[in-house]
Length: 266
Image (cartoon, helix red, strand yellow):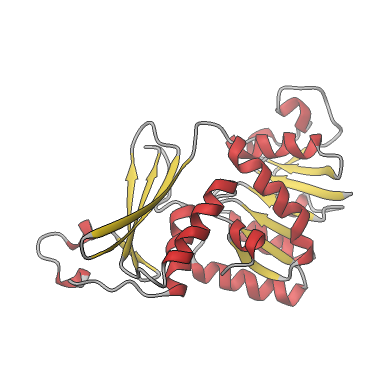
């Protein structure tokens, strides 16, 4: 039985993950973290019967008996949460966006020193993982590309974790040359988007989107688009997150991308 703690247990995705952990025969919900529900029984906080697990305010208060911490919190606290868990010898699954490549390097060093695993994905959807795997397969052959990141009007971070992760991983495969460098763009260079991992990333924030990520590859007279669209519920992220929970103890250091865990790709 794997003891699981969920940080962000009452959030949009965290609720779905918490319920899935409770329903799994091989997982046990040991702790829950959510500032808005501090002191409540997690079952009551989720609108059900008491389960005997009190919601804590901080991750540091919720690691006793935890084998794997799942973090679906916020960009401003996820790094501290993960470092705290790693320092206690707890494996971590990160579904929260907002971490940079430098942040992941820091987490990797800490995790290797502690001998624990960290699995991080900008998107734990299985179909998103397959889209990322396809893009990484294409990148060496079609190096010219740009990423378009679509999300809801209220999403506070840009780009999304999915788009940031994809751009950084594509950059590790092959650089994306620009015919006109961004600095030499006439008019408003910022309209060319952010340069992440050597790839231009453009973030749209509009009503009706949840999270969609598209990478457009191009060469003379032809284009290839690979796009993933998420629906209005957190259901797509549950299976991949639980897969990572079950597998993270077999890893050491940071593994980025659910496709890496599934396929061993980089």
